[in-house]
Amino acid sequence: MVFLRKSYVVPLPDGRALDLGERPLVMGILNVTPDSFADESPTLDSTTIIDRAIKMQEEGADILDVGGESTRPGTEPVTASEELLRVLPVVKALARRVRVPISVDTYRTDVARTVIAEGASIINDISGLQYEPELAEVVAGS
Image 1 (tube, rainbow, N blue to C red):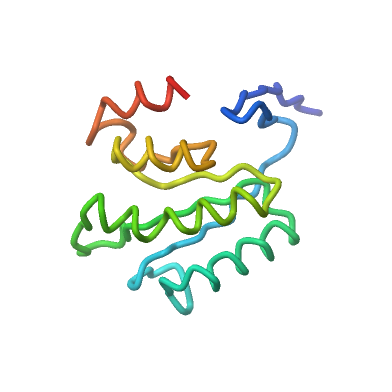
Image 2 (image 1 turned 120 degrees about the vertical axis):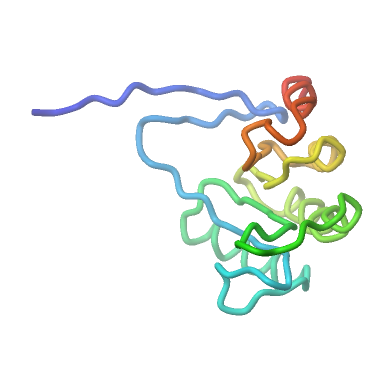
């Protein structure tokens, strides 16, 4: 028995589109945190992160997801200012250098507004709009 997947096309703010459904997409995860449990060697160095992102794209990543706050159990939240200091240089640099959509892992409205203006196409909110419901308006407006 063959199962056909339904295809969905999601328009992105920059005029491109993300095709969902035809095949699984690969998301490259870029943790810009000093305490990530997912990275062998966590770093805040933008150059290292950007090089890693370009390599991920070359290896087939369909989306690059930049996160500036660790979600590992027991970690303390960072301020929106600290999160922006971590992710914004990476988003700005990647927006000029990669062809795949840039996602930012944030639940903060102010962070989302800023990174969208600098080239992010997707906001990956781990809270599902539970922490800052007004984030929905920012994302929908883009």
